[in-house]
Every structure is written in C-alpha cells, then in structure tokens.
Image (cartoon, rainbow, N blue to C red):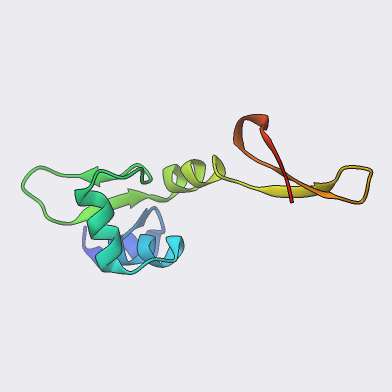
Length: 89
C-alpha cells in the first residue's frame, strides 16, 4: 500500500494531517511526540519512520475534549466540559 492509497481510502491521517487538524505546526507536533505529550492514538511500525493515525481513533480521542456552551437560566453562559465538570464564563 502506498501513501497515496492511504489518502484515497481515508482510513489514516499523516503527521501533516494531524498537525493541521490540531492547529499546530509539524515541528510542534514532533516536539509533543518527543515530550510524550497526550496525543491521539497512532501506529508506529517497527523500523519505519512514518506514523499512521487511524481516523476513527483520532476523532474518538478528540471527542473527549468537546466543549459545548448553554445558558444556565440566568442568562449566563456555562461551558460543559469532559466528565461533567462545569465552568462559568
């Protein structure tokens, strides 16, 4: 399977795709990988420099950080975060 095939079948992201999706530079992504910062699940084959990021796993990981806002009845906006914690803005 070539890299072009992965892009066509849509099942994996590349490092460049992930950096763009997270809104960071490719260099910053590499720094985060080196620092072992929390990042979406990825596949790193032994002896291979290219990482593959499974699309479904990436989107499931991102959903953990979904922030929505609603009004709390007093006209104030409440941000609903992961694990049901609340933050007023």
